[in-house]
Amino acid sequence: MPQDEYRWPCEQCGAQLRFAPGQTRLVCDHCGHVQEIPAEAPRNRAKALQELDLAKGLRDDLSSGEMVDVRTTTCPNCGALVEITGATHATECPFCATPVVLDTGTTRHIKPQALVPFALTEAEARKAMVAWMGGLWFAPGTLLEYARKGRAMNGVYVPFWTFDADTSSHYSGERGEYYYETRTVQVRVNGKMETRQEQVRHTRWYSASGRVARDFDDVLIMASRSLPERLGDELTPWDMGALVPYNPEFLAGFQAEGYTVSLADGHDEAQERMSAVILQDVRRDIGGDEQRVHSVDTDWSDETFKHILLPIWTAAYKYNGKSYRFLVNGQTGEVQGERPWSVWKIAFAVILAAILVFGAIYLSDPEALNLPRPDWMN
Image (cartoon, rainbow, N blue to C red):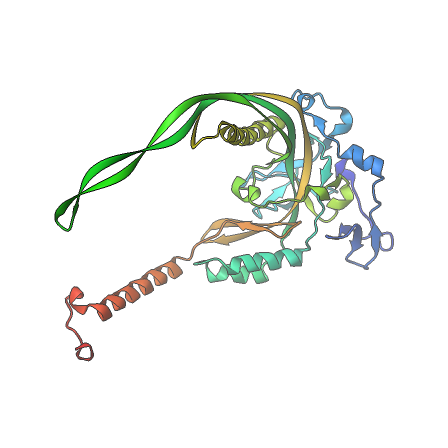
């Protein structure tokens, strides 16, 4: 069924159902009716979670069953590619709260193969966010008040790529080994020259070459440009063992973002991360006290990928005309965010610190401040 035709009507009253985080059921907020989400057969589950061939994906040669047409619109503020199911034509960007209107066109995307369902409810996510905000120094007082009483957080499935690869790398470089020589030096101590012995470190360098191998599994790359990369990366760790085959019923009542990082760009970023790990393997293989790496030639094989959705609760807070975003990992409760600073609190802290420093100097040595010594100190 095309994505814009998904419906989840309640069997009892006809109202729209929503997925219940932490469960495998849909619930009706109107009448309380519950409908179970059928479990995937083991064979279907294994097939759905299979990796896709990277070379085919990069040359746009995937089968029609691995592609999907979706209605999307781009947020004019943060650039998020918002996907919405059902007949909705206007909504709000879940990342920055900007109103957006859906057009009538469709975009052809690689279909999500799997997702991690929401495990935290909105109330649990808000509790985690409030606890995190409570530990922020110099945050505006209105921030915590907003977190406690602000509008409901948005539950969004954010797109990610995962990449697998087998690698074999040949390297050349140098291994540095320390050795020490003793030398005699003259130093001045209390106005007199003294002769002392000291150890001087040197390095001998030896040519080194060899081969290292490493297999990479599920290197995770955020496929969204609407979120700051740092925030998305620091929401880890994710339990990939909780992945289930993609089922639109898990999206009932939530929003999903389309990927804005292409498969090719995601692969380039994944290879950079893998190459950094390979470089550390090379340094360990060279050994010694220091290493110089001249070249690393890597053969990449059995490269595969998956397109998955991961659950994130989001909130946007405006302070002094600027929007700040907060993210909560919908699986673990890990919190990351952009935080505003209260100028008044910082100024007060600086003034208080200056008073304390002045007071400490005055009590210990008032003459240093050109002030008379109080009688009680005489």
